[in-house]
Length: 216
Image 1 (cartoon, rainbow, N blue to C red):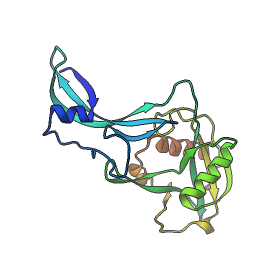
Image 2 (image 1 turned 135 degrees about the vertical axis):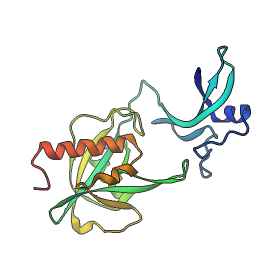
Image 3 (image 1 turned 120 degrees about the horizontal axis):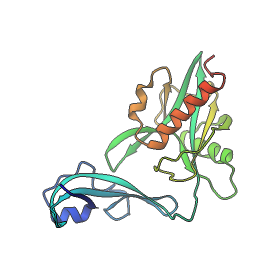
Image 4 (image 1 turned 45 degrees about the vertical axis):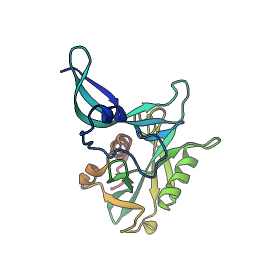
């Protein structure tokens, strides 16, 4: 069966009884209903429905709905930074992720602090600022990890991944802003739903093993 993706509102008009798996819209968002999240700098996350069609292209039935990333202007580069905060508690290595509610799906998820580099900022300055803004933590040291993140997620192009060492004295066991996770048990990664955060975790673990492991 041929398939194509159409805007959510168009699918609603064609198939009024279709029940989306994603929430139609974040009630606090002022973007149009077809737009889950929009940013003129990074792009737009659009809500679409995949439908089946006949041989002539006429819609026959809805199949499923999803959100898709539409990148921003191709002729401009808006780099962002993803920060992997880490600390040693005893002899164990932990990473710190912020807890974020996803209104468009009405779910909770984990992701690393992240943000766009402002005019005149270095990668390190941006990382320190975003980390403190989003978690309240201050980095003891910041290291930019090799290569760049190419996954088309929050920052489609030029995303930098950095490791930020945090003093264990700063870290609280329970907080509304972040969650502390031991790398000895990666079950927490199932709660990460952003491709860039997963890529950042893999990059961090590889960097840790390539150097003298932090846990030793």
